[in-house]
Amino acid sequence: MNLIIEKTEVASLLMVMNICRSNVKKHFKKQNKNQMLEAYDSIKAHLQHNIADLNEENINVQCRLLFDLKELHLVHAFISWYVVRTRRLLEKVNRKNNQVDDHQLKALIGIRQKIEVLLDG
Image 1 (cartoon, rainbow, N blue to C red):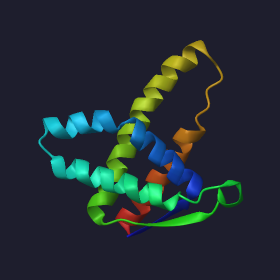
Image 2: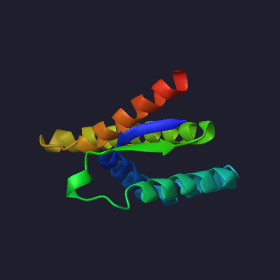
Image 3: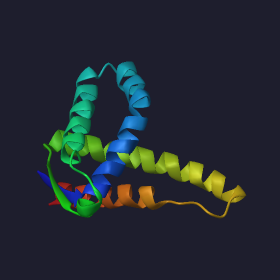
Image 4: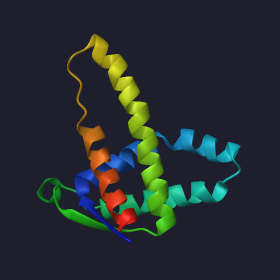
């Protein structure tokens, strides 16, 4: 299935997947799902490949990401988990600081919505 998103969205998704890899690895290891970790790493490599030429001139260019159904479900589940986790953290921070930048979170929610359209279609 083709997921079409901007390179900036690809970069945001790759960044959070890199940041969260150790937590994801622990989760999959507990559940004895090494194939899922391999799929996760394969998705990260695919994302990295698609932003290898990222620069100021092509930052808003659309990317066509080819995923199978299993990979789409994995990305959707990851984003859903991350958004909930991050929203909780932002709510705690927001109580102390009224200036919270949730641009990255909005980008991930946008990706999740595009995946849902593909999965429902």
